[in-house]
Image (cartoon, rainbow, N blue to C red; front, side, top):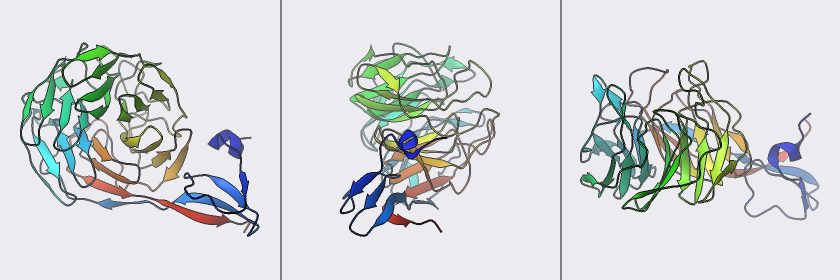
Amino acid sequence: MATYTNIQGQNILIVSSDPANPTIGQVWYNTTSNTLKASADVGAWATGGNLTTARVNNAGAGTQTAGLTFGGATAPGANNQTEEYDGTSWSPGGNLGTGRSGLGGAGTQTVAAAFGGQIPPEAASNATEEYNGTSWTAGGNLGTARFQLGSCGTQTSALAFGGRDPITAATEEYNGTSWTAGGSLGTAKRQITGCGTQTSGLAVGGNPSGGGYGATTDVEEYDGTSWTAGGAIPLAAANIFVAGTQTSALAAGGFLGGAPTTNTANQYNGTSWTTAGNLITAKTSGGAAGSQTSALIFGGSLTEPAAGITDTQEFTGGNATITLTTS
C-alpha cells in the first residue's frame, strides 16, 4: 500500500503555523489549530484565441501573454508559418526558412530558436533557425538530424533531446552559434516533450518504440551534464504539452499507448506529480509555452494521428490551503 511519504517523497510536517510557500500536494499538521492541512491546486483551463492556421506537431516558445508557435503539419504538407499571441489573439509573424513539423523550439516571442523537424515525406532535418521577433535567420546545424524531439531553454542556451530518425537518446546543447553533444537520455524516445533550461531540463513521457503508438511514464531530469530519473508521470503518454521548469512543471494532454488522447493534467514539484484541472478538450501533439501556473497550449490534434486544429487553451493555477477532515 502506497503511503504519503512514498508518493510525495517527504513526511507530513508538524508545525505551529502554516508554511509560507507550500508545494502542491504538501500535507502538514498545525498544532496551533489542531488541524491537518494540505496545499491544493485551484487552477483551471480557459479557452484562448484560436490560431489563424490549424496545425499539428508545431513548436512553441514564450509565455501565456506573449506566445509563439512555428512550423507544424498542415494539409498537404509541412508549415513554415509563425504566429504570435498577445494573451487574446494570434497574429502572423515571419515565416520559417524551411517548413517542417515535429521540430524543437526554445526562447521567447522575440528571441527564439527552431531546430530539427520533419520535411515531407519523412526526411529528418538538422537545420536551426533563429527568430528576432520579425524574421528567421539560419543558425548552426544540429549534429544529429531528427524530428519528434524534445526541447527547452533559450535561443543562446537551448537543449535538444531524443527524437527520430532513427530513434535516439542523443542530447545536444546550443550556445547561440553551434551545437555540442551532451549526456544521453537514459532511454531513447521519440514524441518526447520537455521544459526548463539547458542546465536544468525536464523530459516527460514519450514513445520508446521505433514505430506505432507506444508511450511511457518516464520522466528524466538534466543537470547540464547527465540525465537521471525523476518522478514518473501518473499516466503513460507521448506528445504531451509541457510548460514550466524542472521543479515546477505542468504536463497536459498527450496520446496514450493505444493512440486515444487524454484531457488529464498534472503538476510536478521536482519530486512527484499531483492532479491539476482537466483540459477543456483532450488533445495531443502541439505547442506549449509559459509556466506551471500560467501556461498556454496551442494547435495539435484531437486524436493521433489526425489533422491539425486551431484550439488554444490557457491554464491559470495557484496554491490554496485546505483543511482535511474525515467526513
